[in-house]
Amino acid sequence: MSDAPEDPRVVEGAPKLNDGWDEPQEVSDVDVAFPARGEELTPPWELIPEHLQLNWWIGRGNLWVDFMHRWFQHGDAFERYDVWPRPDVDPVKALRHLRVVLTTYATKHEHKIAGAAWLASRWYAHIEKREDPS
Figure 1 (tube, rainbow, N blue to C red):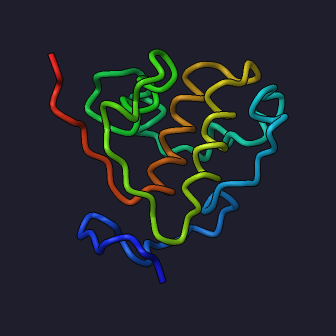
Figure 2 (cartoon, rainbow, N blue to C red):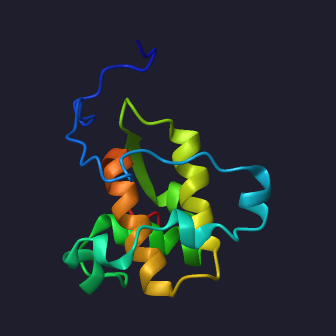
Figure 3 (cartoon, helix red, strand yellow):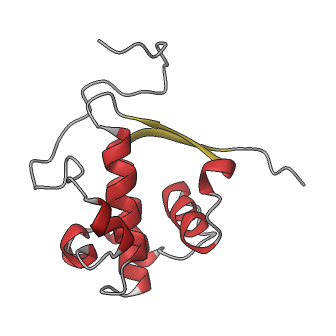
């Protein structure tokens, strides 16, 4: 039982696809510092939904893609977006896994953004963009 307050944005029992990407993998401190396993932790391009493959660049209306771009390019995604993890996903494990995916040199930029966006959309229940502070 979680100590977190009940939030209607958190989806209980979201369907799992049982494709090996339902939960984040354990990532060591060495993996975070030297993300050589990034390609292994990134879903294959063919598995990523087509709407993310075609719209992997920022500003195309997908909040998950915009969130990953913000994280990758500016490092301030968590200051501009609110995300709620699914109750059955360890949020620290998810963040570490996504960090390795975003910082690896092993995959092309579009692959890492689309892959990280897809993983985040599966591991987090809800995303909202905050009001622009400027």
